[in-house]
Amino acid sequence: MHDGSGRVVVQNLTKTFGQVLAVQNLSFTVEPGSVTGFLGPNGAGKTTTLRMLLGLVTPTAGHATINGQPFHHLGNPARVVGAVLEAQSFHPQRSARNHLRVYAAAIGMPDQRVEEVLHLVGLRDAGQRSVGGFSMGMRQRLALATALLGDPQVLVLDEPSNGLDPEGIVWLRTFLQGFARQGRTVLVSSHLLSEVEQTVEQVVILSRGQAMYYGPLDQLRKAQQSRVIVRPADAPQLTAKLEEAGHTNIEQLPEGVLAVAGVEPEQVGDLALEAGVAIYGMHTQQADLEQIFFQMTSGQFSGAQLNPASPQFQQQFQQQLHQQYQQQQMQPQYQQQPQQPYQQPPSGWPQPPAQQPEQQQWQRPQDGGQQ
Image (tube, rainbow, N blue to C red; front, side):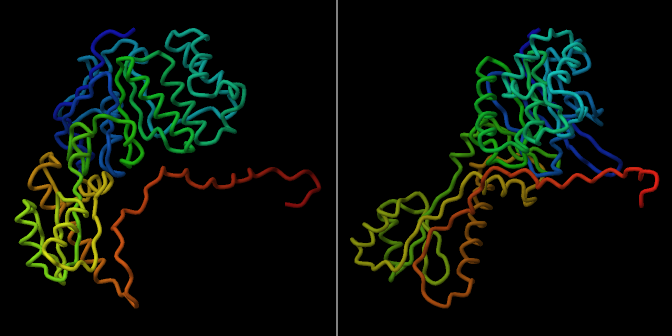
């Protein structure tokens, strides 16, 4: 039942819990045919927003619609929206197949659809197993299978990669992109940009319940700033040569070091050679998307949405890079080491939390036994 556009619209959404302002005047649109990432640190208001979208929480102000209607006006919503929220409950003794059959009957879908979704999520061979013995990743797949039972037009997922191994994450990425290519709508939340960077085309970045950025992911990529850090023998002379060549975005750092933006190291080296200036060290300092994401959600900005290409953002971001450089210079060095490019610690997919051993249930001692 794929009536309507599949468009998700959040308009001036606000939610307070007592004195706590969880979501504040939030607005964005999720278009069909693409995967939209709903990003922000834990506690930013992502889950609250999704619950308001799905009719589980009543907004204090504003509204959210799917196909132009609130969730509770969709008739048989499971045939329009498939959702996976963080908290999933399954009967531990029920098999995955029987769990899906119960939900399929509730929304009027045949048992054949159960077999289809088990195959889609890679649980066909585990369909007869009790859910109580499933790993966290398998539970995530079963939750996704439940959301897909109604063959929905819109898919809303809250932290869907939790517990998935690297192979499962690649599978999820491929599945979501294929789902969107069918002209359907995908909204997926995460607290890590690295989790969804290769999956989404649009992003909504949330911090303290407010939208810090809403737009194409490519625009964030274009905002990546790189600069060449060079330590010349004669900084003024090299600066003059760089400016003569049209490279005017130069920052003076301590100890005669220059930071030159919009230039390659080879160009700096060639110009230094022409100017007869010796170079004692040079490397490229580049920020990645993860750094930009952390900058947006660090609490330094408040209120309005920010464009990463705006002068305000670029100024703040360059100041952060400068501070990082100064911190590196202040670290004690007991022997001179060649300068290395500044690199963000590699970010990988989050690993599932260590499983705690199940507590043994208390059993009544047999007659004549010891307690």
